[in-house]
Every structure is written in structure tokens, then in C-alpha cells.
Image (cartoon, rainbow, N blue to C red; front, side, top):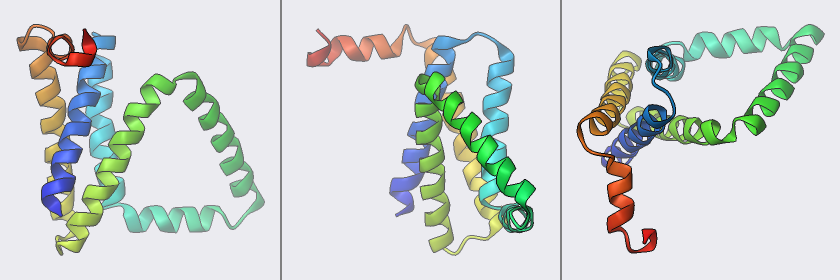
Length: 150
């Protein structure tokens, strides 16, 4: 099923890149997007055991549970305020988890999966950025061709 999940991951990062290009011109946002892609791939592959161990140890105390509830409440507030951004991030996270599961089923190791996920993510961001900078408003052109966009 890699032929489904990896193109889906590529499409998710490409659409996130289009959204990012249309809503910001700051290079910091692009650096954060690339950092997000690499850190998410690291969390799903190479750092997954350490992350599980950290949460297991952290949640053994009352302070850990309180912190989790507080961070969860703040996250929900941010999600509700920035829903238009969060929906893209949620799609990217879901596509990357699906791709990670398919890579695991294909018996790829953690480091190989990290390389594949990072490469697909960065390629998707690059495709979206390149399409927006070189083509004259590709999203607008698609809406003009699509019958419902008229």
C-alpha cells in the first residue's frame, strides 16, 4: 500500500505548501514547516521509543497529569482560534502516520523510514513552493477550469 500512502503524504505536504505560500512570505514560516516535517518524521521513527518512555515516566506523577491537562487545554484553544491552519497540519500528520504504518508493514527500518518520510515531506513542500512561484496562480487556474468554480 506504499503506492497509496506516499503519494497521499506528498499531496498533503504540497497542499500545505500552497497554503503556506499564499498566507505568508516570511522565510521563518518556511523554516518552521521544514523543521516540523523533520521533527514529525523523527518522532514517528527514530525517537518513537524514547518518546514513549518519556511519556510513561512523566505520567507517573500528579504534576505530569496536570501538565498534560494544561497543555491539552491550551492546544484546544489554539486549534479553535487557528482552525484554518490546523486543518492542514492535521491532514499532514494523518498522512505521515499512515505512511509510517505502511513503511513498517514493508519491513523498513527506523532510519530507512526516517529517510523516506523526510524526503517525501521536503519534496512535497518544494513542489508546492515551486508551483506557486513559477506557475501563475495554479490554484486559481484549477478553480477556473473546474465546473463548480464558475
